[in-house]
Image (cartoon, rainbow over all chains, first blue to last red; front, side, top):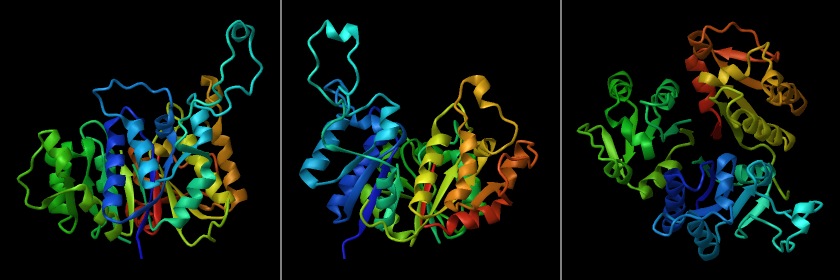
Length: 138
Length: 98
Length: 125
């Protein structure tokens, strides 16, 4: 039986603490532990910011999450209520355009959340908590 | 249940280390990660070695070396991320102090 | 949500921060209420500056904070009855046992720690 692990990430992408969380996921994959999900809560939700621009000679947190998702199928769950409070949304065009915006080309973008993240709620944390053999908060 | 205490802050700036030590019971272990490695020489942690001799103390060697933090304590065990993962499954539960 | 199993695991939410300057306390309570609404076995712990969340006579609105402390009274509707507060943390801060909700259990450090150890998953805020 394969061991299962869920991770709760509460640190922002520009913190080296988040690098440690990524390292732990890599260690899990290398040791045949199944990571059933990473849940992003508190300031951790900022990891999902699509337009985050980190200088190319610095650690690329978002690229790392993208690879963990696409290459190793690690599900990344974003707490949308915590995310919205920090400026992240998947409903960018769901409001009446202001006069200021009308004077420009309408934006085609509907979300500033990177697509590898699954928009979800705290119910997902309940589910991960109940299903994983071990849960670690980083 | 035996608990793994993950300490990620310096005890010189926050009370994470002090709280962790207050909450630890004999079969627990303390894991120093990230800035938690600055606690390798912290008086509270060294005092815990005599007060709570049953407690195991680990530190992520990668994180300690990066910070030029070392310890002569033979009771502190330097470990890798693979070992961190093993600890997570060895202990019944974990708490993260940061 | 598909198949969250019936409360086979006990979950502890540990509060270590004062209520207003950071969102930690509110986000911890949000999480607790969701666990409660899914009928999970959840306990709340207050230690260190976390005890400042529970003392009575606070006036959040005067400093433009939404008074999330009032939401603590909703815990009983979700059958969240295990609310523990560390006695040493109260004493250290010279606080009387005057709280804004009723069913708080003040425990000495060792017993507080024993209770905490009995939970399967622990989230600290």
